[in-house]
Length: 461
Image (cartoon, rainbow, N blue to C red):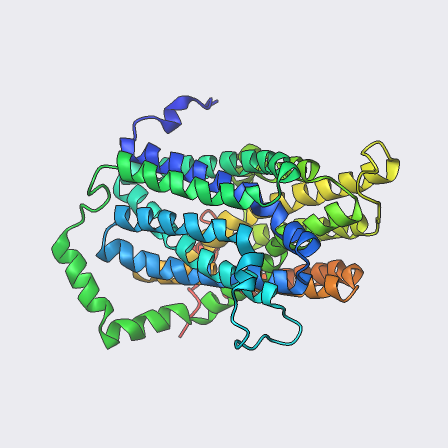
């Protein structure tokens, strides 16, 4: 039996380790604020939860836009300059969350404010949009640099290193963020910006100039020229709008609606309903990254012979049970400070913990299977475009889920949110089983299926 060892993370170019360290520091900053954004701006600042959800949704959409722009700039300007610029701008934009009331006070009275949305809400949404866009610039450049600095045989390990760094940083951020928020709530937002500044300095000083930018300039120029041609744009549109691609992207919207609740509504259930302190909430949220680190590889390996659509359907079932657990926790209304020793609080905490564990198992199954399935629905020349549709769908779903979840809570109908989400999971399962009919076994990951050779690929024309 193969035993895991440190060999899996050895032998990379030094710049790969620097990028991984930057990933850890950056995501640590994100973990500092992740469970507390809704808690702070809804319960302390007084912004309606639907507006908070709208802001987080707008941030998700602007992140997707920033990702698209960042990918283009990484090819034209270079990986390192885009990464440094993104982190430097993020340092300012993320720290601005600590000063939303001051920004709201500076909004000119001549600017009309939408009915039901205060100047505070406008300022919050504005900061969300700006921070999402500049943060989105970083990801494609860092991933491209990692690919440039690793050969085909070690690339999977390179991305695995980034994923481990991501989850270690996120988990540590939850714990530290809980303690920091208890002392000074706005400090977590300032610290989040500070971590981006640290990453900018680390990348600037320790990533060699030109790292990841060694591609053939003539090929890049040719690609750039081709990308600008009408024919290339038409080809991009055809690849992005193939029926099966759109169907899988639609399924991903459904999954993303569920993803959004971890940041938007579940923290309110835990803090306002169960009365958990910020430190307790941050510690509880460590369930998510720990579960990913422990189960990601074993679970995906265990379902290696499954059809991907079936694995995604099982993932949706885990999400459904997770929403039932959140529904149970939402039934509690216990004052803050009641203490964990109260049986009702313990049960509520167990239900929130169960929700986090179950939804994370669903996440572990969903993420790799959806990407693998999408990558096989077209030719290699269309793969990048089609995979980007998953990211767009995810961002749209997170935006929709954040806003819808906030509306349910604002109008006192939180008890209806969770069965609605369970129904969404059911629709996702039905859509996946329908999609399976148009996907060949080989495309669906069942390479050893005896019927694979007898099934013709479905037409997307």
